[in-house]
Length: 274
Image (cartoon, rainbow, N blue to C red):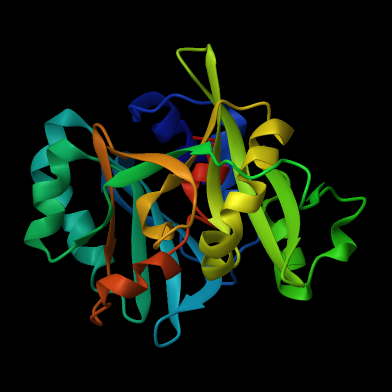
């Protein structure tokens, strides 16, 4: 693991703190002892295809595995496909990648990977008053107020620089996870990464989106397009993702209308703080 961390620090195009690279191997999200595949030449690591497994199971009880890296030294690029071919041999795994650069998409598509998302919405608010629904910021001090399911998700992600909110609408709980981000270090927005109840969010989001913006001191909220399904009374614009797309691979067929179930949890978005 130490050698892989050193390889990623020295060769990955994405630059981040060393502790974030170590997060990839120190999380407790799954009992599967698999961190991906690597290429070796004379005991030197020359390529790595990184996976993060979680116990989250979707669609016929497939384990979820998130791809965080596909890095090969330039002089060994001719052997890159060996890594991908080993990955897709694994059974009962649903693979996702949230940051695949457009220049290599055609390689994935050749092996029947599909687009998970290529658009996002910027939600600028609604005309509904701010103070009608209470939004509670969740920390380790009050996480016991969450449902058992949502509490586990909180505990799995609370150390990774995210913000957590609990919202009660129609006597039901919506648990939201997101991150505060900036455009050109000036324009602040809140990126919604997870919503526990997509149907409630789309039905009642207009009642609390202004409060969510206020709580996070954001100009707008951003969310992947697959989570927006006939939203009511919100002011939003749809944009195409630049430079990257989100993709997935599974040996079973997954209908497009079910893609919203593939969330952003247990991924490099948290571990690498992207």
